Amino acid sequence: MAGGMDLKTKYKIGLFFIGTGLAFFIAFYLINLFNELKLNENGWSRSVNLGVAASHKRVFATEETGEWKVYGANENKLQTGTLTESNFSMKQGTVKGLELSPYNPFWVSSDGGTVYYLKNKELIRKDDAKEDTVARNVDQLFTSQKLLILSGEYGVFLVKTESGELDPLMDAAAAKKVKMAAFDPESASFLIATDEGGNNYTFTYFLPDGDGYKPVSMSVSAYSTAVLSNVEVAKDNEMVHIIYSTIIKEGGGRNTANYYAVFPVEKPPVHLEGIELDIYEKHGLPIDKMEEFQFYQNNGELQLLFHAEGPLKKGRTNVNMYEAHLEKGLWKAGRISTHYAQAMQPLWYDGESAGWMAFDGEKYEIWAASRNKQVIEANEHIRKSDVMRALEDTFTFATSSFVFLLFCLILLIPAIVMICISFFFRIRNGKWLFYLSILMVFGLLFVLLKKTMTDQFLFMAPDFMKTDASRIWLPAIISILAAGGYRLTRNEDWEDEGKVFYFVGVISWIAALIAGPYII
Picture 1 (cartoon, rainbow, N blue to C red):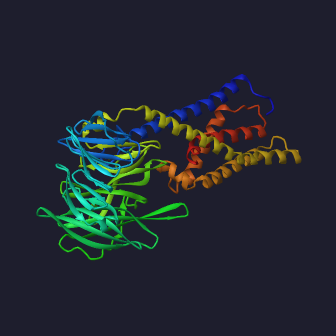
Picture 2 (picture 1 turned 45 degrees about the vertical axis):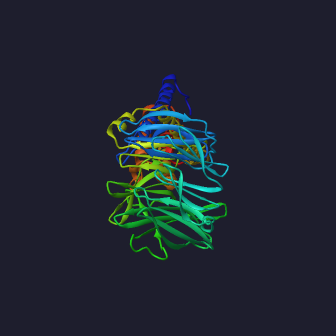
Picture 3 (picture 1 turned 30 degrees about the vertical axis):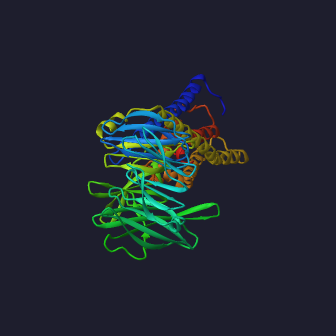
């Protein structure tokens, strides 16, 4: 660049690059912070961490008059929390003196006074007064808020939690084949799944009948390499709804398939044939990778909670908690959770609040959300995690922009070509060559932006950048802004080669600020 730069030009150039870079950094940070505060949708509050954790996925929740009591199992103790639904205030505590394994399920009464848990294959009942052994040689324990079922050497039994008495459900031979159990969210009915071998299963549905239960058995078949992984049941308006899931593990990965079946309670099928379960999000797109379903009843309407992989915010997918309801025969779902931890097991849902377990990479924690306006407003404030997430995303954008700057090295080709032509043909002050080089820069920018608008770009970028027209107007806007910045900061004493090199720097900088954040 003949003539060098005077001090004024240096200041203008420095102010231009530093000022625009800082302005875009601040703008992206504020946008990211705003997005963190607006992750909640479908009328739910932002997710609230209840401060109750479990070391190995064993948690329990029970309701008592406007309060939810949640428990997390840790070595020889229960971490407890009492959540008031009206304002989401939380009281925490600890139940000690339990020889409790964090690997086994447990059951707690609604008043918190009685705990059932497994110790050395014995079912222990502990209340305020004493500790008793209810059953021995117990292999499995299945729990809901209201019911407790054990399976062991002597059979399958329903435990009367008030007294500890056992009601027989299945004999010892059937107990050896018990795979899992599912509980109706409202009634006292439940379902027990047994493994018959050869990928064949039996679903035995127990419906209350007088003082006992009326069992109805249905056979279910899975694909030759599939294994039953989950089953849920709910009775709604004299119809029984069942969702069951199978998994296939191949090549180090796993594929989950979910099936849905419904039948009249008075006419259960001999062989249950489920159809593939499809659940759609608000835009009508199917939700993939759904797991750990749980039925609930709300104002006479059947609801479903589950976790699935899906968008949390622009450019970020996560394993989220979803609610779903039947609408004209189709399951329609909306996201509830707003946290970055991996949502897992649903715990409760009553229409006004929902609770679930999530894994943050180290421990299992209990989260909740509410539709209460007071709770929604109380959780709209900026949290420390919001500030850090927004800053993290902004630095990610900055890194992406730097990578895009490296891509922009291709824009130097016209300047290099211009220098070569000028040297070999001894052209001096060839304005036509200068303008031709600038046009080539525009053309290369158009090609570069088109090539970088990949699926990743479309996933990350704002909606207005995703239209077909954006492939035209985006390079045009960048070119106009670059031309303006160039004219404001250029040095008239530079030769044409220097001007082209500087223009390439300006247009690369503007393109990196506008389009660069979305390429990685």
